Image (cartoon, rainbow, N blue to C red):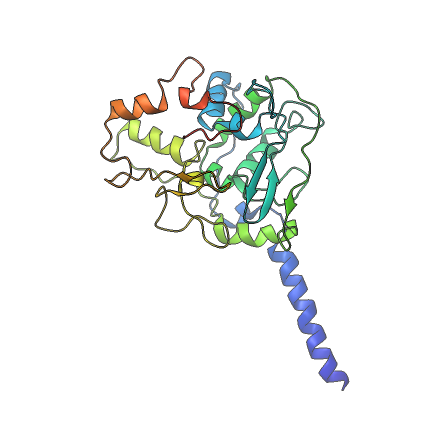
Length: 281
């Protein structure tokens, strides 16, 4: 009888150990190809500013109810099938924002989805795209954010459905869907194409909204950029694939006119809509 009881008990212990190991928010990069680290050069604030607007950070993180998109106090509600996510404060405030974060902490959060406190970040934070960014760009982005106004106050906790309330379980999601790799090089393409791909796949994180997702909340393989229902039920996020069903027939002039001429802030007019609206229309 004792032996019959011992076997299930051992299996439970092994299962629990495996769960805690696989969901641990430690750096999975140790198991993947070595990534770059930021050099010791002074941050390029102009580059950081351009990256902030290329990623339209203010659309999600600017404090609601006020027009200044550089006041990144968070609080915007993002509804989804998993519950409601409330965008965090990413202002320069050293207590409630990210003003006290170091470059390695910021790089780890952006590329691996692990907070400085050692917690798994929910993938509503699009680190599956930000993982493609290089460390110097992330250093510049953090440095620029730290020049923006500090905003006191933390966003409220997410209101999620069970079992998504178990943040620890996100570690399994990261293990399956986060590869931790930079973009592959393609010497056959022009410098403009390479830069464009980097902006689209990395800081711009275009696929995160313009692609359908499966039941796990991951982008459906083979359908990137093909459009998807808006997660908040406000219509359909358009298909931007490069064929006749998307924007393949658009001329460069038409695309430029739609997105808006880039101005001195490094941001097109499509990003100058009221806070909380979708930047892509």
